[in-house]
Amino acid sequence: MKIAVCIKQVPDTEARLRVAKDARWVDEEDLPFVINESDEYALEEALRLAEKSGGEVVVFSLGPDRVREALRKTLALGASRSVLLRDDAFAGGDALANGKALAVAIGREPFDLVLTGSQSDDLGYGATGSVIAGVLGWPHAWLVMGLTIDEGGASARVVREMESGKNEIFRVQLPAVIQVQAGINHPRYASLKGIMAAKKKEIAEVTAADLGLSETGAAASRLEVLSVGAPESGKATQILEGDAVTAATKLVELLQREARVM
Amino acid sequence: MAKVWVVLQQRENKLHRMSWEAIAAGQALAAELGGTAEAVVLGSAVETLANEVAGRAALAAVHLAEHPALESYTPGAYVGALADLLREASPDWVVFPHTYQTVDFMPRLAQELGAGLLPEVIGFASGADGLVWKRPVLGGKLHARVRVKGDGAVLLSVQSGAFSADSMVAGTSAVKRSTVGAIAADREILGTEDVGGDTVDLTKADIIVAVGRGIGGADKMGPVNDLAAALGAEIGASRPVIDNGWLPRDRQIGSSGQTVAPKLYIAAGISGAIQHLVGMKGSTIVVAINKDAGAPIFGVASYGIVGDLHEVLPALTAAVRAAKSN
Ligand SMILES: Cc1cc2nc3c(=O)[nH]c(=O)nc-3n(C[C@H](O)[C@H](O)[C@H](O)COP(=O)(O)OP(=O)(O)OC[C@H]3O[C@@H](n4cnc5c(N)ncnc54)[C@H](O)[C@@H]3O)c2cc1C
Ligand SMILES: Nc1ncnc2c1ncn2[C@@H]1O[C@H](COP(=O)(O)O)[C@@H](O)[C@H]1O
Image 1 (cartoon, each protein chain N blue to C red):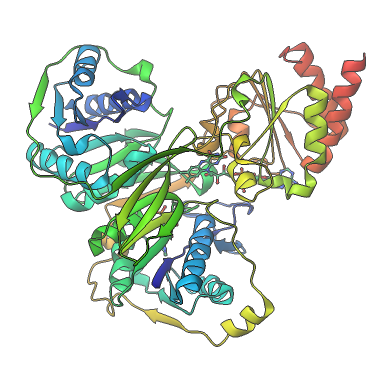
Image 2 (image 1 turned 180 degrees about the horizontal axis):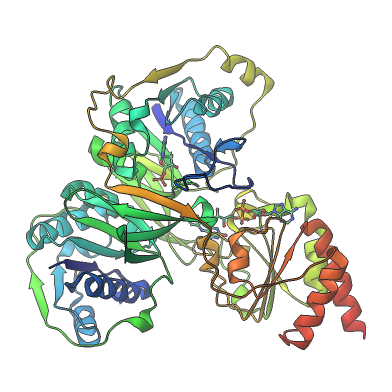
């Protein structure tokens, strides 16, 4: 099986975020970046499928130069090669614009399956994988917690998460785009051997012109982020000051006396 | 005049509760823009649902789209049916509830219609920048102000709790039956299954101590167990704790897990992403313990301690034990 995996590089969820001077996004200076959480699960799922069927995993990402580090990590984990969609023209794209660019890049090779994450931890559209499927004219499934390729490889059995602790199960025809949800598997760690091997693997760069896209990124997007800022809090939160013991003692007192929940 | 459509969600002939919130949002948007709001119900035999909406909400019309292929949800059939309807009606804004079903097909419908796509909004306001939408980004740590540019319809989904169903304008309207053309399912439905079984029912607990990724590993659960024992509490968790295998799936709280409303909810090392908040924000008292003062969990908390949970939890356990022995 030949499998494409889309990964996005996003700010580490642990990182302290500072709003940039122009307030349009966060200040990226000294900001640690990681592979988007559900994308790590998508990559692991792809690697397992490829190992079973003797196939190949190719990783795609759209973003600036810093994304090379994330791609190098996917190569260390076992992907064969990677493609970076790198062009200033790609900047500022919404899910429709980015999904289209990724789909065109993926569509230049014959893949049996495309795996993406379910949602990016930064913009969180939950849509890019479906858009890729739409451009390719393939079926898709969002929030996938189980994936089994049927005998013969023409279809797959998909377990999809629903609200309220239930999954739905169905079959889709392949090729398809499967949007993997975190928790589907347990992603592996890179081995030293993998890290060494990754140094020799390819990170190919493509531009908008290479993909024949005259309009992409912000120019092809209907959404424009004007500014970002801290959410206004709806609730008056009482912060208990002092060291852990002082704060904890005060909290228990309030829970007993004021809130009466203890 | 702006034309707003609201696409309602039903499953097994029951309206999803967020359908009412979507109607409230659609009405508010129509009022803001000086337009009208209409709703559409899809399914195989859902006339009673259309009647229910038409009898309760102030709308210009409730459209009823029935077809055998809409019996079970599949993106293929839903996109096919809605694309025809929306092409004919050509609304400016189409409002959806932000549910796992809607988000699954909304992007494909937007592509089919050549429309814009605006997922997960939590509000809007008109001002100097025109109509500006608000949506959470970066796990809810920040909110983005987003403007729509260009021409053509926009499909948007409203996040749970952003528009209260209580704010829906009551009224009545007529049900209009639509014809649905040739549509086809693109999934062969095989059934449903329970996720890991609800062996632990957290909804009955008076007190829940919930842990997030900040706990740092399965081997670090000791202080959490101690605090829960001291309080007589159940233990809950955010999704990454479960995904990492630190606790079993039946402890997950949030949109994919259990929805709880205990008297006391202590969230330790949980950032407060919307998918977690929807599962616990009905709690009477929320206590947040987090080393990041900017974590959104503080926004729903009555009491907060900014600090390292590895220090705070043992201190809290000691304080609870001391209080109980008095
Ligand atoms: C479709 C979908 C469904 C989802 N369903 C759910 C769901 O049902 N339930 C759910 O919870 N999530 C769900 N999520 C995931 C959700 O979006 C968040 O990713 C998740 O809730 C984050 O979990 P967290 O707060 O534990 O981790 P993080 O966001 O990584 O936060 C960890 C927090 O711990 C704090 N911290 C770290 N170390 C310490 C320390 N030593 N002391 C104190 N604080 C510390 C950090 O400051 C941070 O705020 C879903 C996501 C999607 C896309
Ligand atoms: N810039 C990008 N490069 C590669 N993949 C992406 C990019 N943006 C989104 N994706 C993929 O699409 C998924 C959903 O992203 P989103 O629609 O932004 O929530 C992510 O989990 C990734 O797998």
